[in-house]
Image 1 (cartoon, rainbow, N blue to C red):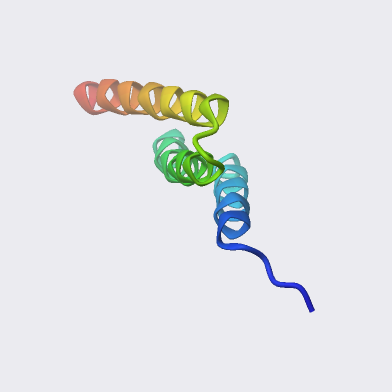
Image 2 (cartoon, rainbow, N blue to C red):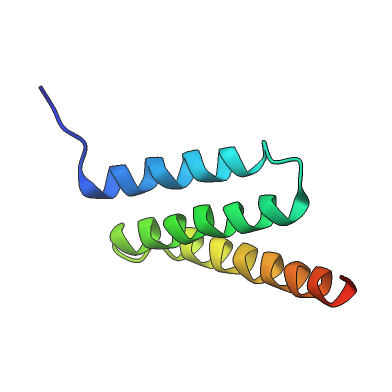
Length: 76
């Protein structure tokens, strides 16, 4: 029986969390869960010997989510 590597587990957690974020009806919750998923993807990219495309894209998505969360907080 083969087992998943730690890197694969992080990758699957990232995929599952990002997928779950899109099931959220509340945009604030969506962004927060998506930040967690993207953080897993950043860790996954690092574990893949610093996969720059994965890291860069997910850092950018986290930044965008944070900007919109701060805007929503100011409006509340």
